Image (cartoon, rainbow, N blue to C red; front, side, top):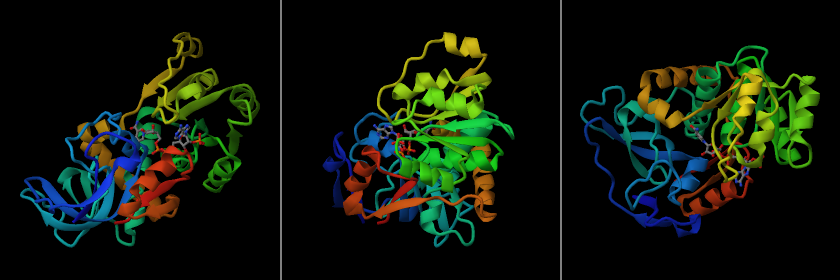
Length: 324
Ligand SMILES: NC(=O)c1ccc[n+]([C@@H]2O[C@H](COP(=O)([O-])OP(=O)(O)OC[C@H]3O[C@@H](n4cnc5c(N)ncnc54)[C@H](OP(=O)(O)O)[C@@H]3O)[C@@H](O)[C@H]2O)c1
C-alpha cells in the first residue's frame, strides 16, 4: 500500500510517498482501508517533532480517518470486515491503510459519507469536550471563539450555537468571518484590522465574555483574558500562532475567572466512555441537520505537503482532507 512517510523531523516537503506492507490486526486492533483522512494542526507539529506525541520513525501523520474495515484483531467485536468506520488514530492516516485501536473506532452512521466522518472527531470532538465538559457553557452565555474559521474554531462556532450561546467569531480576514456568519456566528471581530478589546466591550456592553475558546495563543491571549466577564472560563486549546503565551495571574484573580486546560486526546484515552457519549451526541447533531463540516479542499497522498502548507499558511477554512 502507499503511505506518506516521515523518516526524520522536518517541514512538509520532507515527507515522501512510499510503498509499504499492509499492517496486521493485533489483539484489540483493526486494519482500516482509508477513504479519507482529516488534516489537523497537530499533523503539522508531529512531523517537526513539536507535538506531545513522538511516534517512532518512519511514521505517517494523520490523526483521524474514515474508511472500510479490512481486518479485525482478537477482541474487536463491534466491527467486522466491510463495515464503514471512523477512527481516531493519532497518526498513521496519511496512507491507504492504517492500524487503529478498536476502542477509538466507531461504526459510521447510516447515510454519512467518508469525508464527513473524517471531519467529525478531532475538531468537533475537541470543541464539544471543551464547551461541554470543561466550560460547562450555559444557554444565553457569550462565547468568544478565536481562530474561528479554522478547524476547531468553526466547530466551536457551530457547537456554541447548538448549545444556546451568543457566539462572537474572531479571525484574521473578512472572508473567514463571512464563513463564520454562515455557520451561525452572531457577531464578528477582525483581529487584524480591529482592536479586540474595544470590539468585545462594544459587543457585550462592557460586560465581557463568559467563555473564551482560544486555539491561537500568541499576542491574542492576554487582551482576550482581559475581556472576561466575572466568573468567565478561558479555554486553553492550542497555540497555532506559535509562541506559548505567559499570562499575568492577577487577571484570573480580578475577574474571578478560570483558565481551563483542554486536552481532548488525553480525555478520549482516559475517559473513553465519556468520549463515546460525546461522539454519539455529535452524530445526533449531524443527523438532525445542525452540524455539517465545511470541507475547504481535498488532497491526494502525493499532495500531502500542499495540504499541510495550506494549514501552516493560515489559508484553511474549516477542514482539509487527504483522500488516498
Ligand atoms: N487541546 C486540544 O485537545 C486540541 C485538539 C485539536 C487541536 N488543538 C490545537 O488547536 C489549534 C488549532 O488547530 P486546527 O486544526 O483547528 O488548526 P487550523 O485549522 O489551522 O486553525 C488554526 C487557526 O489559527 C489561526 N492562526 C493564527 N496564527 C497562525 C499561524 N501562524 N499559523 C497557523 N494558524 C494561525 C488561524 O486563524 P486566523 O488566520 O483567523 O488567525 C487558523 O485558522 C492547534 O494549535 C492545535 O494543536 C488542540
